Length: 256
Image (cartoon, rainbow, N blue to C red):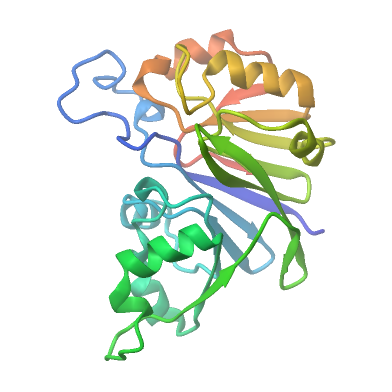
């Protein structure tokens, strides 16, 4: 596989950071690394751009990082902080005039078709963007010649998907991964995993959970994402982490 580049479009939780009305030290921080839009990752290999999740901040993220081409989108689950930027793809579709391919489980498909019925209905109108909606299961599939391995994880009681592409894996909103699914996460160069906060949470890994998982899987490098203001200041948390584990931030670019 050719060199894979990944850009963190967003590394925040469903409320983002800063949170509206919050005056905590993180939300008031002037450090750009403490400004977190909703979580999303852009993968680029050759001329192929694959987005994992598209939340309500996509327009802002695309303008900030000069993203003008999206070929495929992988959805992890149907929560709005991971799906509600779909309509903002219209100018990208107009520019490239090529249908954008969506990959998701049936539950996500139902949610998308309900939320965006004007897009997925049989009614056509000028300017309507085109999407190819592909339903996937927890089985490997290919995007062009690129192999994609879904990873089944639990977000509280909700089963959702993470994804492995080559030597990189992206897991967000997880609170549990079975032993069988962890086998898919061995021999990684890069593991990206959610880490909400320091305190225990019912539906997300906290910092301790994330570090235990990383220690078990032993990837070469790990990046923590989907981070809330309760985690603390970026510069402070960074000092506590082992040398091969990093707190991701918006706009960070990494390569495999």
